Image (cartoon, rainbow, N blue to C red; front, side, top):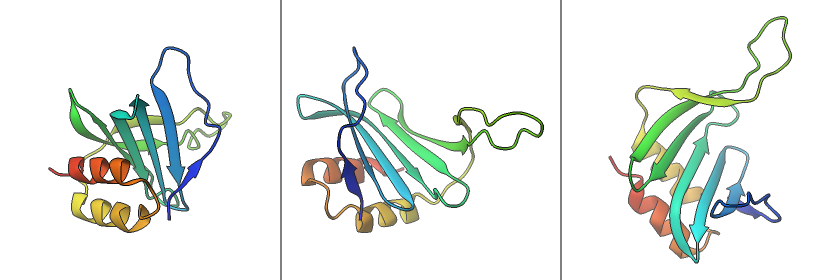
Length: 117
């Protein structure tokens, strides 16, 4: 189950951020007055982590998370998102649906409705 992390750092000038996570998935939602403005769903956290971001002007964007670990002779770098190819949206959607039963329906339904190709 995805559970909400309380006391998430908020950045001045940005919409309110909510963060839900479990062992394999993170969901970050940006809201303004209960309206969802954007979300990012990170999945396969224990393997080859990837992220699906959604904004109304761009729709879904799929990226790989470069964790900054693979830099021989250097300190770990900050993780960044890099371009990534194909992905199984149906599997991701099904995993999110099963993990998100404890999330409020407004967020859950919004994310599920936008996890479509």
